[in-house]
Amino acid sequence: MTLADLVPSLRPTLAARLEPGLWPLTAAATCDGRLTVGGADLVELAGRFATPLVVLDTADVRARCRAYRDALPEAEIAYAAKAFLCRAMARTVAQEGCSIDACSGGEITTTAAAGVPGERILLHGNVKTDEDLKAALDARVGRIVIDSLDEIDRLAALVPHRQQVLLRVTPDVDAGTHPGRTTGTHTSKFGLPIATGDAAAAIRRVLGRPELELVGLHCHIGSQVTSIARYESAAVRVIALLAAVSREHGLALPQLNLGGGHAVGYTDGAPSMDPAAFGRAIRGTLARSARAHGIPVPALTIEPGRAIVARAGVTVYRVGAVKRTAGRTFVAVDGGMSDNPRPALYGARYPLRLLGRATKAPTEQVSVVGRHCESTDTIADDVALPCDIVAGDMLALPCSGAYHASMASTYNQVGRAAVVAVGGGAAMTILRRDTPEDLLRRDVVCGQQVAPGPVGAEAHHDAPASVVPRPSNVKRR
Ligand SMILES: *Cc1c(COP(=O)(O)O)cnc(C)c1O
Image 1 (cartoon, helix red, strand yellow):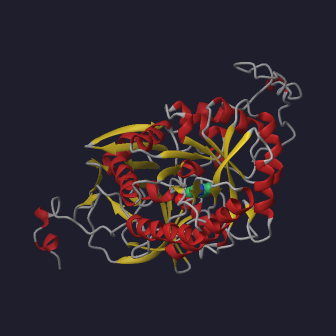
Image 2 (cartoon, protein in one colour):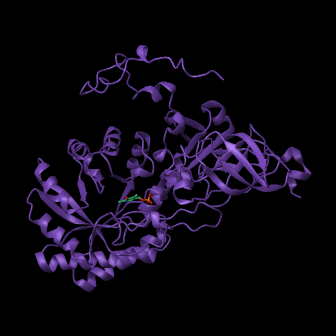
Image 3 (cartoon, helix red, strand yellow):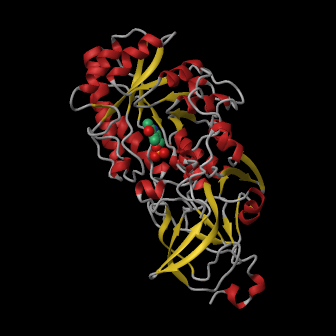
């Protein structure tokens, strides 16, 4: 029995336990079921902004950026924008001294629209379309990371000025993570393998193009990586390649980019990467390895995405239905794979928390599922929730800041959830909810186009809405 049970009037003020490391740094829970983030009450926010709703703790994002800057004061921290991007996010991380790692023209356009200067943007991607490259050149992106031989001549022919580039290589280090999140081995679609000589051949090719200035090498071994030693192994192999370049070409490439992928624990007790420990180990390894090869220590860039923003986000859902069948309890909520595809993609696991009311009911293992027309539309397969949960209750899902909103879809023509930034008790929409008009915006019917498209020809083979025959031969039920 807790103090809150003995003295119910104390409940609103007594702190309740939150799993450490999973919730935003400013999150606070009380025994009456309240949960605040950045001083804002999640139930109130849900009432104001509707559910599902992603709440983002700006102080948490800033603190994660600072932890990396403190751990590696002389390194460049390039936030991987694909984890979550909008102008407010780009501005926040840029204010904290981070660069931005983009992997499409769209990410560049958003980052540039936030006022981040081009020299602080890197462009990645194993396929860069003409549109991506045009956005990069328009924004005067500082560095472009070359991922294939095909790209070298194409890029060289396109750039109006000498362009700084890095070359992405694969060091053949298994990141020890989910196969769907491994990128540093020879079987990866990303980068050029070191061991096969492909990386060295690409370096020769880049050095043969005066339009391109090779400033360093890049590798990214995967995502949700918990082992610092795997980054050290990758660093040792890439430094050996830098030394080989120095021997063969008499060139000291100044930059080494070790990518991102630092793990975040999504369930109670799951390991996370500690930036301070990472910083100490990597600085030591770079110094030792460079000394052993007799080359200067390269300037380091790292690209954490998830580790910056995952824990800042909490999703609030409303329960739409509770169904008990064949020994299983389904708790269905008003979101799902459209706002969080990670369980379907990787079997990701999360805890959930009942919001807004206290209960003494014992917990039961339930499946929290989404509203979409897919059996894999699960949020948490086997999670403990109070057995008195009913439709209308609200649930909070932690660790929703990374790869939720950025991977959101409008599947089933369900509008994407809003993202609201909180801090100091105030809340501000940074991405608004999709409206029904948004869902119709790309939908073109002949004669009803609001503004002519660039080619103005999308609709010519569509029948006008007025002549679509009525299905008179369909029997009414
Ligand atoms: C995805 C990616 C990152 C960021 O990965 P996280 O797991 O979010 O840290 C960094 N660099 C590159 C090249 C990536 O593709």
